[in-house]
Length: 185
Image (tube, rainbow, N blue to C red; front, side):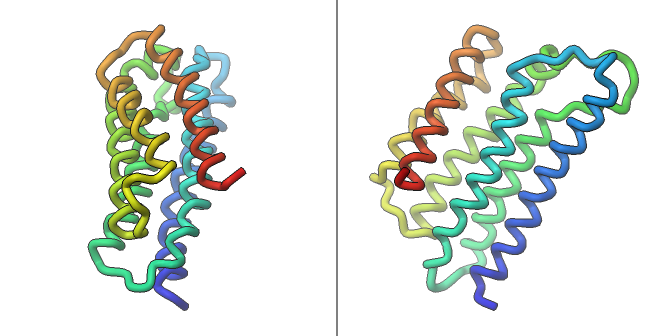
């Protein structure tokens, strides 16, 4: 087994735990739907987090060409996956606590943490791709990441519904653009 294969197992486990937590929370929310006030931005971002996890896992394949892995490189890549999962988990309420669940209020109460972690993740992805994966900083993927970092950091600062709606639509477009660039579609 190569170091890449060994590391990919760990990354897969971390990402699978994040996806499992999202699916588990959504199943509890759906079972408790009589006391849940759903909110489309919250729903969008939980689905978006799953898509980010899938893209992260798929994109990790590019690291197969890294010839020698160092401990700092290993820690950096694992940190990326952990930050992604933590951002997703910060978006998930505890539906088993009883009482009504207002996902709009919950979304805006958590958005600073979620999008601070999101901006950190995007920054880490840029740096780790360059330092560990050997990707130049002046790369088309980073042309998509730079505005995403700025917008995501702004979403952490501004708790305003109109801003978050525009941010969400822009983030969806940037993600589609990033996937097209990454997969040469």
